Length: 125
Figure 1 (cartoon, one colour):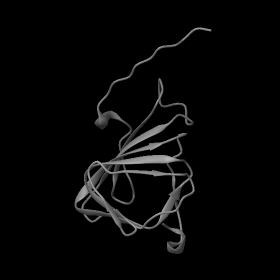
Figure 2 (tube, rainbow, N blue to C red):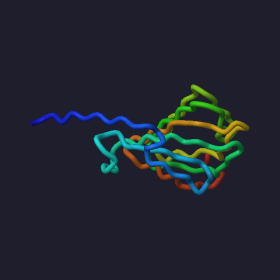
Figure 3 (cartoon, helix red, strand yellow):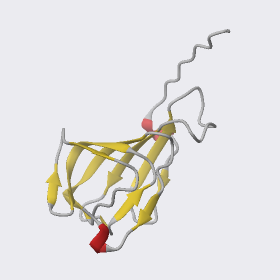
């Protein structure tokens, strides 16, 4: 069996930019030789503007969130630079609110499904 070696390098501004309907900005790529494999882990750099907020929700996929700058409050807990959250797919949390300086974060979704699904407030952690 032949081993295929690959390496990609790019700037975040080139990585799947998109302004979400919520006003947050997302740049994303998949871990692998290209972005075609929808099952490959998904890495997302999120930029939440000051005061940004969204309702309680969940993600289908297990994921890790690393706060780079600013702060974000999830439910009653506020996270800042260097804080890491890890959640199992289907775990509800929220609501979320970005701090006065907004928030920059990296999210890594285990098998490529970063889609958020809304929850009732009573289902969130």
